Length: 301
Image (cartoon, rainbow, N blue to C red):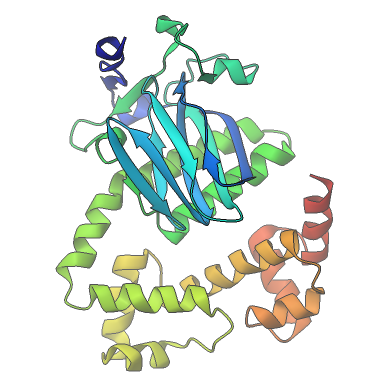
């Protein structure tokens, strides 16, 4: 059985024009501590830890995941997930295939918990000719842009407006691109003398989005000129400092609108926008709807 399973994931080198991912499931989920059942997937899963800590046992190894990390769970490979943090951990999970090859109607079309798996049903992993496959790395630390794409995919998949399948496919292609390039981004960060310091500053922005993060203040923290700081920041974060700060604030605003009972004005203040009218304009520019409308939609789900 284990020798047979060792052949997975099935892989195929294919030009990017042939990649056509279909999304079968995309959702946030909160789970209590403890081990989950051992299983295999017919499709593939990106499991992102939004809050807390978890572990996955796979390939005879234990992979520990903290908040901000993601694990790529390949088709056909035995694995077991465990929630470590108390009282819970929060995940963002996306099930998909690379070539739109599976007809998924129920959970049983994605997950198999027994030895009675249908061998011809396991999806194939797409590989690029000059890039390492996703299954070669297993654990990733996705960029902020990648996390935002995953959140937008969940929103699209949950709300299911007309054309959502096309939108999900587009988001999934962008997410896969970010993950495939992540090793290159990591190399850039390591090559820069200031890479570690920049990553630490980015973490500080995430922890305190309401602070007045300006280019001059960031440059002063890093003891760099404003222009040099902005150039290095964009290299590592994939966007200018001002966009990064705004993205962090927007992500936190969405979380508070979904998960808290704070007023719209209080949420704006807590993420760095004390003027409620300006906060509403910025939020609508990103999301297409007002903070109040976003909260109402979240409460319906």
